[in-house]
Image (cartoon, rainbow, N blue to C red; front, side, top):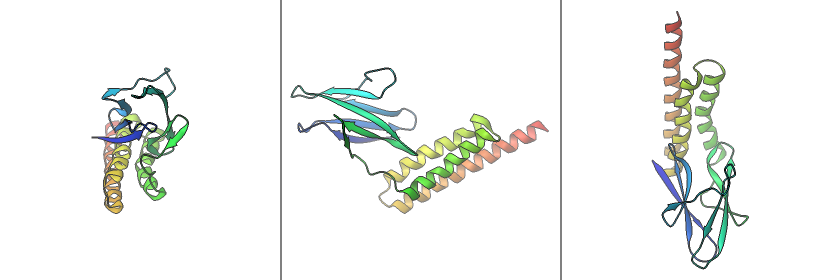
Length: 161
């Protein structure tokens, strides 16, 4: 389940494609080919347009939002509206399960359903035109993650006794 966004490059009308996937993460493509990072750690990319200009593309993370901020030649490009605070709080319910799992009981195995619910929930909220429907589906995913975590914790406790 990948979602694509078009990032315009200058006045040429050409664009870079941003693909977001739960499994593959965030990737940039230009003319069908994946862009490579300039350095090993910084998310800086370059794309050469048909007019010969080279554009620098930078990605910066957002707190609690899986979509990065994109800067083309130093200017931020608004390609998708950020999620409203109330939607971030709903996706935060699944993220809270990850913190509880790692800090209290369940470990990283118990954290996996919460991470999955967090990323899938944000993707679902962005896909639905009706924000309420998307939020309800994301909430259902978060509740399912908590139930899976409770079942895993029950197995751990029962297995230990």
